[in-house]
Image: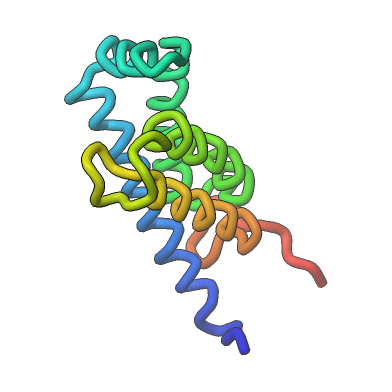
Length: 135
């Protein structure tokens, strides 16, 4: 049975953890790989380079939104296709295991399910824009 007294704090922990990871990945694309390098990578795997910029923005803005608890259901749902795209296009050819060379697809698919779960769960405690609760 779900403990309704502690569930909002568990959701908060999940929300902030995933937000920090998205922010870290987006900032790595921005500051380490650079926007042009990220776009170049996307082109090298057969995708339009502009998707590199869109992905970088989604990861940074989505990460900040999750940390703050801003529109969590919408943001989490929007990040699912980003993660599935990473799994399919970025890691799909490297097998299942994340420990494979260049990383397999298991890890981004797991995170896609985490984001889908957050989209269903809502914002949790200390959210900037709390979801409307059923009466």
